[in-house]
Image 1: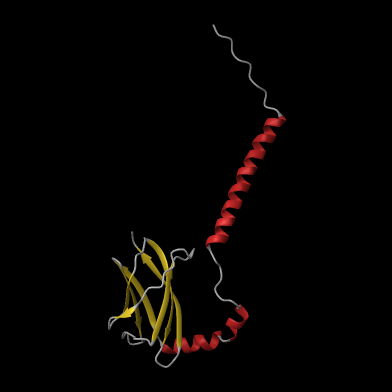
Image 2 (image 1 turned 90 degrees about the horizontal axis):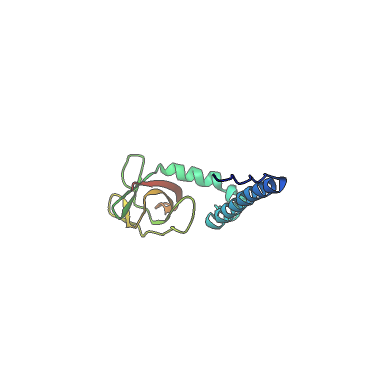
Length: 156
């Protein structure tokens, strides 16, 4: 017959170590998440919001007067950006620049070379599954600047 070992008593020192360890883990995780959030998301839309706001209504009115609609899709290794007018006809712009990237970080950002094929703008790209944003700036033939963020869903 074996004699049972005496049970150790749970003291205030033990409770302090348990609570101290739990809070150390929580604080460590919070610091890690905060550092990664700040490092991976720039959070900057414009350099000076006051200056950007001064002409916002004029730019918006001019852009809406164009009557353009934009739709983005991805198939295989090709992204298609369709810009259409009020009648649904394809629009060929004077200049198009776009940044394709994730909404949460900039490490996957790329600037596709969109070419007009008579119906839409197409560009070869390598995309993973998930949500992507196309931040586009197009210049109309009358000089109006058209800016829009177009959401692109890529299925895996």
